[in-house]
Every structure is written in C-alpha cells, then in structure tokens.
Image (cartoon, rainbow, N blue to C red):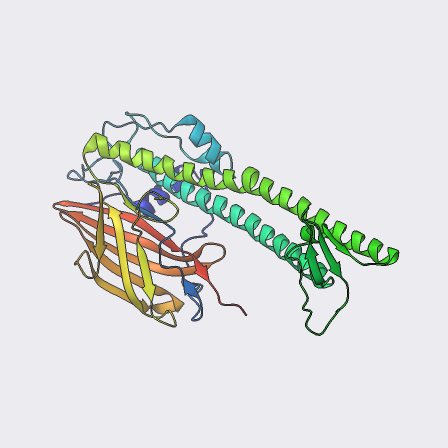
Length: 384
C-alpha cells in the first residue's frame, strides 16, 4: 500500500510548489555531525518538553493503486485560529508560505501537505522563540554577573570596624581596626553602604559617595532593565512558544474528535504540564554513556499513565552508537491497545540542551501510522 508519509508529502509539495517553504534543520542531527552529551555534563532528570505526533494516513490519487483508499482526512476541513496563526507565522521568514488549513473538497495529498508543513513550521517556530528567549536570558545573566562583581568590589573596599547601630537604624563605622578583638563587617550590596557612616575625611567621604553612588545607580538601572526584559521580551516569546504548540495540538485533536482516532500524545514535562506533579524523566550513568532509568508519564487519550521499564510500559530500550557518530535511542511503548516504536538520535546544542529526535511507528490493531517524536532535557555543566 502506497501511503503518503512525511517525506513523500515533502517531495510531492516540492514538485508542485517549488517555492512553498524552506525549513532550516535545527533539530534533526545529520550523519557525521551529531552532537553528543559530554561525559561531565549533568542532565536534569525531569523532561523539559516533548512532541509526540502521528500523521493521519492519506493517499495521492496520482500515485495510489485501486486498493490505496485509506484517507483519514476524508470529509474534513481545518481552519486554524486566526489570531494564534498570525501571531506565530508572522515571526517566521517563510510563514506566509505555510498552507493555512484546507477545505473539505481538497485532495487528500493536499490536506496531508498542509498538515505536515504546519507541524514542521510550528516545530521551527517553537525552536526560534525558545532560542531568542534563552539568548536574552544569557545576556541578562552576563549583565547580572557584571553587576554582582561591581557590588562585590565596592563593598570589599569598605570594612566596618566597631560597628554600632542607633535606635534610628543608622550604622556607624570606624574605618580602621580599633582593637585586636575587633572584626570587620561588610555590607552585602552597595545600596546598604549608602546608609553607613564612616569616620572619613572630606576627601575620603567624596570618594566613598562617588563609588557607592555609581554602583547603586548602575545596579538600580540594571534591575529596571532586567524586569522589563523579562516581562516585555522573554515572557512574550515563551507565550508565543506555547501558542505555537497549541496550534498543532488543536489541529490534531480536531481530527481525533472527528475520526475517533489517535494522533497526539502528551508527555508530562516541566514546561508544558505545570499542573501534573509527576514528570517524565531520564537518568544517566556517570559518563552519560548508559541509561539507568527512563519513563514517559503520558496521556495516550484516556488520562496520564506511567510507562516505564519496571511496569513493562517501555520495552526494548537501546542506547548505542550508530555509524557516522550518531548515538541512537530506541524503545517501544506498550499501551493497553497500542504499541509505539521510537527510533531517535541524540543531539546536544545550545540553548536547547539534550534532545532525542526521530521517527515513531504506531500500531493499534489493524491501524499503522508513522509519526515524529522529540524529547528534550536541560543540560548543565560543572564549573570550569
């Protein structure tokens, strides 16, 4: 049976509309350039986010034989939420080339192309928003480190001896050691120094006021900038990232309701499922070459359920090196009425951390579908 799955949809689209879309691959590692987990890196056990998607079976009338009539999108139309679609696609250089839904009368292969390109575009949009947000956070972290260094340098210059605090809360200090038993006290930040009174000369007082004032001013300005960047730049980007995921989720759930089939799975993760106490997770052995434990706390359509190595929900787990420097993660999820084989490749890159990305094969009785899976974890490195 000649079913159109993602790669054939892409080829068909390229043949009909050469300029329709160009997606830069930032997720799937190519042979020979897969980036692997460094041995000293620490993987945060709880999964940050995931995408587990099945493609509806469709057919191409120009390619199908007389028995190739499986069309799970027959009789369906799809139109995305206009505001959500525009908010996401307007941020992509190719967003205006992504088919915005389809009508009931469209050919099956055209519907399949629209579904596939929507999923591909949303995947890249989510990566783009996350990367922009993390780059901003990285800049903020650098700025915070500079401010912390400035505060540390300034407060270190002004040791307070024989400290006294009046009833009014005024701190009075001696600038020099008064006795052998006297020990220095240091302020935590520059703004604290502003309220300290030293026995300085006029010249020393002027230098003190200048240094403390400059430090306090720079700290205050940075804090204002920091709060604004978090609220006005980073938060909207992360909100767009969630909106993007919602477009695909809404589309596939519409198909599920209309057809009574299963096209999307939801794994509990720190980014996507704040209300779920249990998260999907992974645990590596020291050196990150072996997996000690792996589970998916996942909703397969009837509520969250744990799939792991101990309860038989995950079987045939393999983590090994393939050709061309690619490290593979393979496993089978066993559900009450389905099985799902995953064949993923490991990829490590900033700012996404650790990713496993690849294909899935889904079997439910006589139903066979293909899909895609992407699992992501935060990655940390020890101080160097």
